[in-house]
Amino acid sequence: MIWLSILVFVLCVVLIVAALFAIIQRDLMLAVIGTGAVSVILSILFLILQAPDVALTEAAIGIALTTIIFIITLKKTTRYEE
Image (tube, rainbow, N blue to C red; front, side):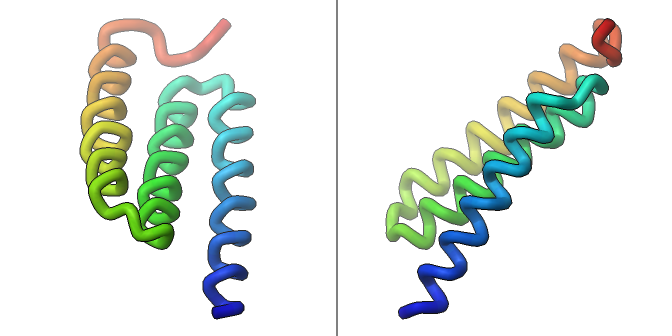
């Protein structure tokens, strides 16, 4: 049981690091990758917390749909923030 607590703690730390990476990044494509990483970690955390329906929804919307929409938008605009 202690290993599960350690895993959740490590995932929360990685989640915070990925979120800060997405916020600080000046290259917008890397910021989108950072938000995708946040969604992946959240999906894993929801699965660990025994909420598979929420994990599947986060995976479908957060990882796939939102990331694809952001990438399509970046292809039509500039990639770097001024």
